[in-house]
Image 1 (tube, helix red, strand yellow):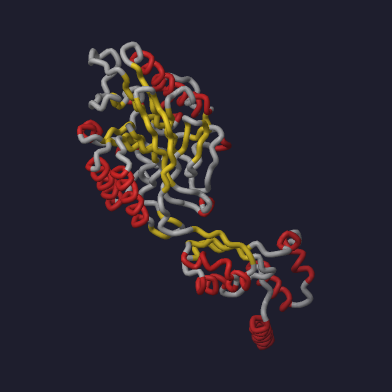
Image 2: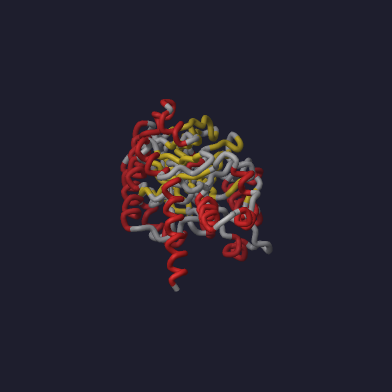
Length: 402
């Protein structure tokens, strides 16, 4: 049996003002092709399916199309909700969807209700342990832990302290107990989906903090005794332990992810348990370029030719901010989306307060030029200085007439 671990689709998200639905449709095409070509039996989606709790109609349609195509290709889907999703809305019609092979795990009460997949090729169900159903020799039990907001679920999970650690520990405890009960009748191999921040994970700028000050992180050892834990939330694909991994987002959602290799994990599972884990890579629709330097160098250097077709984040280091910098950059790099300035000598300049600059001005023209330099990081040019001088002279004459 083959399982494909994905997460953080963030359908409906934009990238610095650029809509990404077409790129997300391209990802779905690649995903469906992978399901068909690699004979994937189950697609795991570990939360943040949508980018917001109230997705647009075209976004909902994209997920609908994706689920239809995945199941039509012969794979089941196990899906949990993330901190960007509305668990109630995403979980709507879950019992009906389950008949079509889409298993939603968005409610606390379903934490210990696994999707049972007999490893002899027969179909399984999600009945609780002790139901009297005949057990297979080896069964894969797939559990889903949605994003758990501590203040909202602490009472339901029976914990006194509303913290990410305590609620996750309680959720994992319920799953372990269900596995223990089922193990009396069958060899149970477990896969757990969890949308959380596990200790040791590397973050990106595009993730929403789960709590303030890093207190949202939960210990890695909560998950290491499962056959495999498919984590969601962090957007970089990474291995925290051989059996605990983040698949990351399928697309880059910030320039901090420019060096990421986006993809998923393909798991091989048989009667002996989870075996090989293979990386699957998605082709990015557009490269990301993070450029830094003086404007003239960026516009002329051949080494940056590859970035002409990329989304660009540019930091200019010119000692003074060039005029019409964005317009000049977009003449070569049309998809420059972010422009920042880190001028040489900026630290020395920043030590001088605006009031101290004013005290150094010898006349009104000096005050005006100093203000212009302060607010835009570039001193007045000859034309600008002449215009300011003319305006000051006109004001002086008008005042004299009064």
